[in-house]
Length: 276
Ligand code: PAF
Image (tube, rainbow, N blue to C red; front, side, top):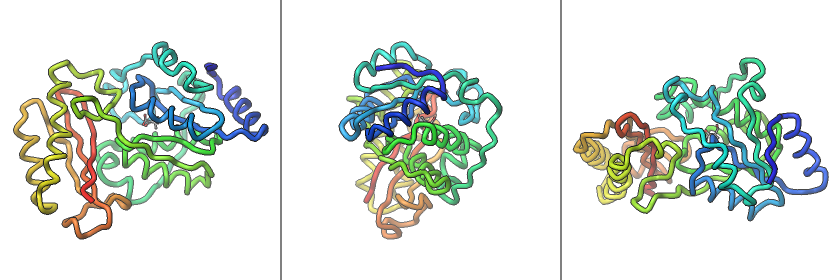
């Protein structure tokens, strides 16, 4: 595996490989890699001739400076962990990606206006800025994203439509810790006690499947989360899995999912579950 630090080298390398008829898979990450990321990289490896992984803590998608400051940065161990699973790691500096402040403005429509989009103003524009650039520079046949960030995938699907990017967006299932907690780079910020407590998020969502319909599911989840002192619920929404607009009944859409964001102490964790 080779580490690339410049956009110029990334563009040249990817274009040359395309020219040789190779298929390219891209796994965009912000580093602090865990088994969830590795599952994306393995999938990319299976489905493409060449795999690029990007590692870049993208400042423009953080709406909270403290969150950006605390975000774990572990480039050396990330590169070690990837080893030969990927062919190239793109690990640029902030100045390399943003020699001047970005000016892209994306309007993705209703999928961005709810949940993370509403809770974190500017977040999805920042995601679009970096993912749009990575897709244009690498021009992969396929790009891989984890379903923990389910709304992010919906937004990126809109992005590729808006920008007429031909890459296929491949959603990949959530990978969980043995205790059920969805894997996330932010889990490293939890104390061992918070890590165990955080497993209740998935447990409560699973248990909520026993409830008959949306009002009862909402009441159940809100009340169960409220029973744990270390938790602060940011939102729990039950929504159509395509439009991401909230539903009042499970009968209102073909696919229905629950989306939750909980602060465990200072750490903001997200997860989701499918009801139908
Ligand atoms: O999901 C993430 O880790 C980030 O939002 C992404 C897609 C790598 C863009 O910075």
